[in-house]
Length: 177
Image 1 (cartoon, rainbow, N blue to C red):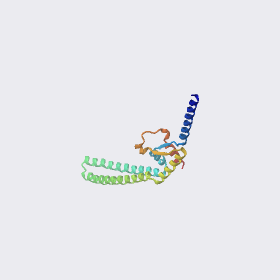
Image 2 (tube, rainbow, N blue to C red; image 1 turned 90 degrees about the vertical axis):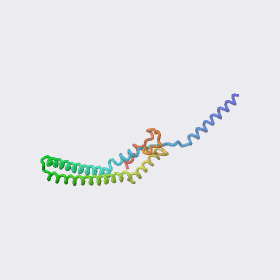
Image 3 (cartoon, rainbow, N blue to C red; image 1 turned 180 degrees about the horizontal axis):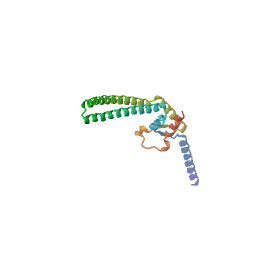
Image 4 (cartoon, rainbow, N blue to C red; image 1 turned 60 degrees about the vertical axis):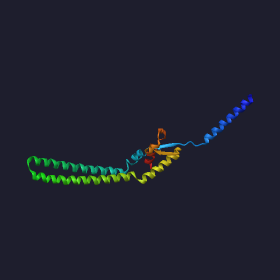
């Protein structure tokens, strides 16, 4: 009876060891996530293209503010002429207001289109995505990740541990290149 118990224990031990060997031979899949919007903002924050975009945006806004103030001043003059009964000057000023308002509307529309085009070109930058994918591949290989998922495409991600978020590594690596 004792020999039989020894044989069962030895068989169980061998089965346990075999199972452990099989489990250690299997590769555990490791996932990472990255917030690509955060990476994009960090990467482009200091780029010359973004600084140029921000400079143009400020210039355009300054011009819009200047033109708007001119129109307000003309409206005040028109009111003064109207209050004093000087209808001919009020009509002349109204014509200037109409012209300047139309110019401002056209200018604003044109500059908004130009800024939107610049912004889209920044966001669609092939060189950025080539660099991003290269950095992601490097981090994935170094960290043993089988897959890195984007948080922006999160309809399939129900939960993730912050320990798998490689966003800060990506930002740091892009900053080093």
